[in-house]
Amino acid sequence: MNSIFDFAEACLYRSDIDEKLELTHRAMQLLRENRLQLTSSGQVLPIEGVRFPERPVLLPPREMPSRKLNTPGGAAAFFHAIAHVEFVAIYLAWDLLYRFRGLPEQFYRDWLRVADEEAQHFALIREHLKAMGVDYGDLPAHGGLWEHATDTAGLLPARLALVPRCMEARGLDVTPALIEKFRQAGDQQSVAILTRILTDEIGHVELGSYWFKFVCREEGGDPEAEYRRLIGEYYKGGRPKGPFNRPLRHKAGFSDAELDWLETGG
Ligand SMILES: [Fe+2]
Ligand SMILES: [Fe+2]
Image (cartoon, rainbow, N blue to C red):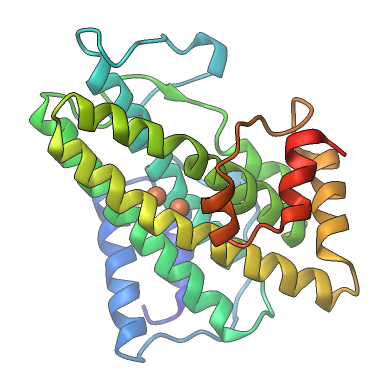
């Protein structure tokens, strides 16, 4: 296997977790060695066939048991939820580069690097969980994350607006306070893992902003107006909820006008 699209197809349409991590790292290694084929070939399979492992069991968001960080099992439940976010993020990065063809080579390089970082995040969290006696799949997980992908499978600007510039951007808002909580609890390992993830996620959202603007301009649109329009059309539940971390979102390519709009709707 030496085409990025063959790696993507294997990672999306096979459900084995360890194989997925290994293939993702191998593809990244081939990219670094300039041995990965980036020219598009073959058909794009429908998103409905994408396969997830049998465990964790996926539940609708409102059926997820709510657990507080400071309750017994709360930290494990929290990190299991994060492990799931990272696991789905591997799929989201692969799906982005698999489904949307004909973009500059850099697009494929960028999102493969994101897939590889998500695989690293997942592995870090999984190890952390195992040290608490829980493996990924032992608890139920949020079933709604992949919907952002299926809802936007036919439209790249919508995918970029909803996934990196909405779902991943949310992480920039909420992670700093979580890191602070673990710092106060003296849990340095959790602090280190979440800090590493946050740093990488700023980069992912920044890439999302870069490519969002790129595709909007290619199509002759105004990125800020398009962002408002696509969020209005595709985001379920009205509008993204704040509070928004303006400095980090700024770093990740959000304009003041976009942030004002998110905050006030005006
Ligand atoms: Fe991540
Ligand atoms: Fe990410």
